Length: 247
Image (cartoon, rainbow, N blue to C red; front, side, top):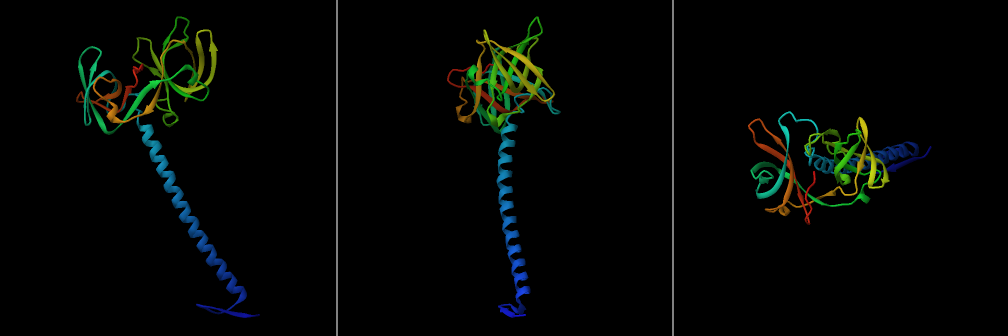
């Protein structure tokens, strides 16, 4: 049996030397794998943080349930002023409504979209009214970007009429009709078939700058009324290029 010498490993036989080398390589590889895993985990966490931030935008698109610390209130009107985190909106009844915004509130531009964008796999929000034959007819449609997929998902009462409902769901099937199209949408716990007339407003949401929210802008602000009567919100949706938020 031959004996070899390596610095720091005196008089080891070849078999023992090879075992030590193998263990050293394994340790180095394990260390490199651990470093790569940590780097990958860091990237994943960063992406999750970004996604989580996007979803926080609006649980705020005021979903069905009242939150523990407030009742959902939907503010519609034109901007009087935006000073830091204080937004003043002139509502349709002519009264000024003050809303306290989160420091990192989301600004979302409401832009024109089209019926062609309502297709299988798209996540939409649509306010509907119930027809005499119990079918649902859409009065407006919002096409969500993928980053907001799942926002306020479900089917729940809305405030665009006494019998209006809001359905935020994924389009499972879209069929062209004589006047528009009929879609079947699915959400956690159910599905609905909705008629969308050709003349209803169809809009999309796109991320925007807070600086774009200028006096006179038409806005929709999903807010919560606190126990002291104040309104708080984490998002402002404003019309762009002449579009009026239909929701």
